[in-house]
Image (cartoon, rainbow, N blue to C red):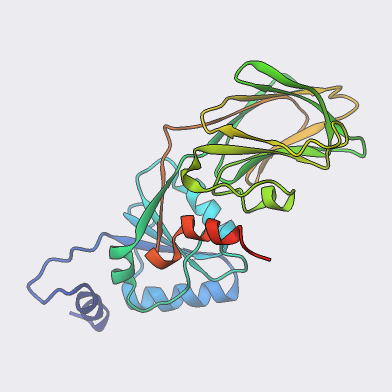
Length: 274
């Protein structure tokens, strides 16, 4: 038994004759120097597992790295535990290389259901994307976008004149949505935020809070003169003419958080920040 395995057994409370009860883990990291240094440290301590087969993936970086890891593992049952080696790190736990097995064993799970975006473009093609944080429609040129908004098949706004509009999940409500003055949503609220970006008409419309199972449809008016792009997290489709957004309950993403650093608590704390 090498020192690395001995250390692992010691931290999981197993002797030489015991059976390791910890699930298999692997590490993925951002390209930043801090994340790469953390990767080297953790693999030296706990080994280099295969991300394609691991039961738990430990993500080292910031929220962008976490989002990419969630997208990469979306179609298989795996749990994700992030440690912040980036800037904001809202979806991450604190970085601490020690006692990782114990942290994973007592971590609490948050289940997220992403948004499914279906977009039709001016050339008649259809595109499907998935968003964990938000779907955003954005004007492509100097001219403001004109967008018709439908909810569950009923027209709610004939013409929204704006720079764009965001549909945010609770997990994403503290990201771009918050910067656009949208509401912060508790995870258990079962709602989505519909937030305009620089709305010109109706000038005082601040958005809406919708049931998480609502089906949203956006029709782009004058798409040739006022082109609009649709973005799901970091994937973009340009020159869209019609976009539908709904939650995809068939996909469940399992994030792990330290009990004292739980995502629900972080979202609550964010509402009381100066």
